[in-house]
Image (tube, rainbow over all chains, first blue to last red; front, top):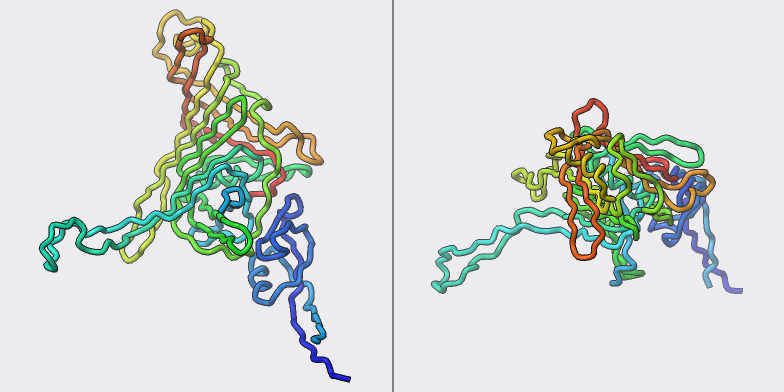
Length: 72
Length: 333
């Protein structure tokens, strides 16, 4: 049996806490394909983007998530 | 690139020089233009010493400065208009009425007048690109209401631009037009009735050529005035109206030197109420004191004779001479 290689990408889970999203349809171009986000929605994004999003003050970190994929 | 795919969003900045990253309002526009304009030092008619042909331009022009003129236009909607007012030098105080929010705009101190950021995205998919112009101050807002709708145009000046980060939060505009058929027009005492169209122009000139040495762009755009004028077109004409406007009052008998002043409040609202609230979206312009000057009435052909009245805001009181009130679902500006 051939041994399968495993790659692990670490993404950062963020929760959207923008006050405006409580009442309005709010979107962020770099997240969710620019589709509207609801207050409290969570997304998993790359570390660099996560840092940019956290800097806006409209996101809070949830917990790091490991996505494990089995390569063929 | 199709104009219909364009997205423009504006937000007030926390300070000059710091582009906004949150609180953008997408605008429903019919027109937007935010393109830098460069100024050049063009070395014409120099004795070059290189040749002796009689050419005008004998050296390479070099840029000396740039600005980013901003021109926007569209119909009046509930939300993003408030950010435009911030860019015109209005300060705002917002109240949470649970099912809606009330925003009161009055003229801010010139030194405290806000700067705006505006993002314009052009094109779709991989061809899409979005620029962010920062340090914008608007210089004019012209609003025209007639029976078909309420349209506005805004002009201004931006000082710098860059590519948008993509992480900016953009709130969609509410899909409710502010309708000219809704709301009311109230005078203090003049009672000229309702016009058939109404124009309001807010002019807030800024210093446009403020450039320091050792810098390529402009240093700032300090406000140099604030004037609001309006025109009521197509008022019903009667002798009483004529006297009130021209002869110092309804009991006047001759041209009067008295200046006609009055308060004026105009409110426009959406046809439907705000979701979950018992009030519609609305924008109200309340002048504490305005003077009414040019009066125009002309009989021509088979036209119905009506009159047009122009007015201007007077700022000679301690309180705000113009208070603009917006009711919508936006938390704050």
